[in-house]
Image (cartoon, rainbow over all chains, first blue to last red; front, side, top):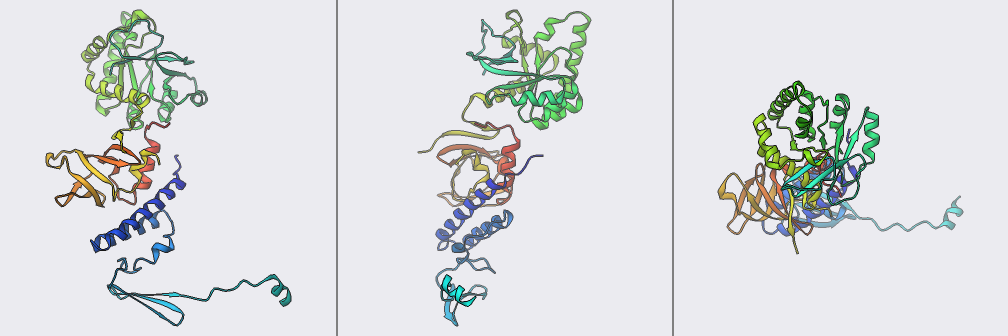
Length: 114
Length: 198
Length: 98
């Protein structure tokens, strides 16, 4: 039996996702439905080859209806230490918590506690 | 493209552009190199296939069991014509799927006479029928072992056409096989590099 | 990047020309690929959007600095499936490999 080249598969899949999101950015203002199609394709590739979509790209589209966030089509608010992104196409609300960056507990403190 | 598959270094070239010289130990020369794998068992076959360099044509000689095993290997390009070759219906079908060519040599007809020759005619006609059915790759060559068995391309084609071979198809198969080793722009069927893009 | 990886790579955004086709009207269509489905490529030409079936056509495509002729039968899969299937085609078929 021939083995599948999983490493190469994943590498190509990553490149393709990058390309698709770049094209989506360009296409967003010209053809909104096509931009959604690119997101859909990128997500399908990511699911098929079990790759995470990078966090930068993940914030660019609505999880529910897959339409990319576009000027005038989404609302951003900050309340109660979280960012609230509302998609105006489907009404899905995405909440991204923001916390102050935790300072690392220094070694001396740990020793003192122990 | 006129190319012939032979077993020695020819001194005269009729109207051929190039020759593929099959040998058990391919040597450097002006002709394309071919590698004959003579194997008695599948184990021996595997061992010998490992020796094959990337730019060698690989042909197999052996009995039916070895040939059936050889067809499965990726490295094998063609089944050579030799004395006492037995081809099977299922082997020919498998050769189509795995893309392994079958050689028919003209020299084999020259070497035998009488009853043997008539038997050979019968056998070749039968196999050509099966090959036509499955559209298996096949090459028509002279398969000569000395200068006296060499024939011009036209004669060989005419002879096999009489026996029922599809000559144009054979030409395209041999061209494809040779291109795989000589043309840097050929990658696979339906995928070719046409030019550079600045 | 190896040029033979076209059949596994992204076609959306590439410049494509139809070289051979059963339908003579389709020969010479040139433009950018906009969308891809299992059986068709959608090409944005100067005159507008054209849909070309993959099967039985030959496409000339620019990829990895090379100009290549690709038979449509090799890419006749769903776009996300093409990575796996294309690599299998390259591995299983008799391909030049050096």
